[in-house]
Structure formats: C-alpha cells, structure tokens
Length: 255
Ligand SMILES: Nc1nc2c(c(=O)[nH]1)N[C@H]1C(S)=C(S)[C@@H](COP(=O)(O)O)O[C@H]1N2
Ligand SMILES: [Mo]
Image 1 (cartoon, helix red, strand yellow):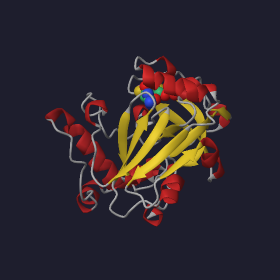
Image 2: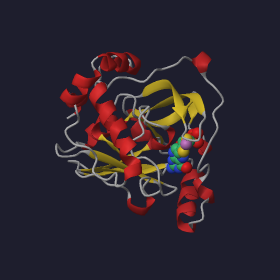
Image 3: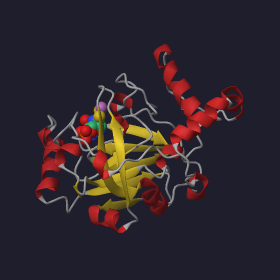
Image 4: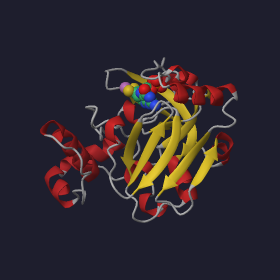
C-alpha cells in the first residue's frame, strides 16, 4: 500500500506552476475519480473545487515548503489549550491522569480497516522512524506561525497496522472530543506526522501534548491536537455532530 504513495521530491509551488500551464487539459485528464461524498450544500461547493483542483494539479505527494531554524516565529496556541479543563468531567479527569503520569500511560489506538489493530505508546512511536520539519502553520482565524515539528510519519504507523486495500479515509479522535478525517493521499504524505516534539522539546501542553497530528498540506485546524484514537475507514465519515462539516468548517482545506 505504502508504495502507491511514494514521495516525489518536487515543491508544491513548482507543481502548481507546472499544473497551471496546462490547467484545462490536466484538470480534465487527472480529475480525481471520486470526491468525498458529504459536502451537502451549495456553500460548500468551493471546497469540492479546491479538493478537485489540488488532487488534479498537484502530484500526490509534493512537499510543502520547509523553513530553517532562523525562520522560527512565536507560536500562539488556539482552541483547546488544556483538555484537563474541559467541561466533560470524565474526559478532563482521564487527560489529567495521563498528564500527571508524564504521559507514560498514554496510547494512541490504530483501528478499523487494518490487518492488525494496534496501540502505540509514546515510547513505541519514538522507536519508529522520525521526521523533523520546519513548516508554516496557517490558522483560519488569519494568523500564521513557523514551528519545528518532530514525530513519526503517520505512514509508518499505518504500515505497522497494515492498512487494508479498500481503505480510503483515516479518522482521528482527540482527548478534547474532536473528530476529523483525511484521505489516504494526505495520510501517506511524507510530511503528515504524529508530532511529539516542537522546537526541539517535548510537545507542550497547549500545543497538543503528548502527540498531535501535523497535516502540512492543509489549514491549521486539520492538525489535531491531543490525539487519542485513529480509525481507518472504507467510507467517508463526516464525524457526525462533532465533525467539522456540520459545524460549518470545510472538510478539505488545502493550502
Ligand atoms: N484537539 C484539538 N485540535 C486542534 C484544535 C483544538 O481546539 N483541539 N484547534 C485547531 C486549530 S483551529 C488550530 S489553528 C491549531 C492550533 O494549534 P496550536 O494551538 O498549537 O497553535 O490546532 C488545531 N487542532
Ligand atoms: Mo485555527
């Protein structure tokens, strides 16, 4: 499976320029065979177009720009900054307990359409190959920041569990009760990582400790903090009430 998603070392900028040169033909010739099914209403038609255009114009695994240490900026924390403070007491307590133990008992489950459902501790993740990348985070609220992230490529975790050939989406759940998903192209993208380090240190509490997702090909809210569970699915899953589509956010928001 992983072989289908082998990285191609070409920058997204170059890919976009090359793509635009032949936009009409390329768009028709390389239109993704199937779009995620649940965009639902008229206002979300732009998302479908963005998704189709990205999937058609960009070679699947082109990399986003990476920066140098000299480019690091201050990095605000938004949304949940401590799941121990959330209203739901059971969830808050569960997170506090993990935190009090230095996350030694934290695990992320990898389930669903995989050959071997597994659970990874922080230590397990650190024993898999690691990747460090300095990237620009873009929040839908209008700010950007550059940070360095270290973690395990999601592809390594998915390969360890053995994704079944029919699988098409990867769903994520967090300790603050977020649900979101990405498609296989983003899941196996070389810069999509489960990050446990930020700017050379353990991932701080406010930025998603102990492990967050980094989806560098999409806008900030796709990079889920406080990861808890990963479920591989054959079908698109909008996350129901908790999912970002029903809460007015775009499911696909490529940059
Ligand atoms: N679990 C969880 N993940 C989350 C959020 C959140 O509130 N909870 N906020 C999102 C948004 S909108 C952004 S911009 C980034 C913020 O990451 P940061 O707090 O490290 O800057 O995380 C995203 N992932
Ligand atoms: Mo955001």
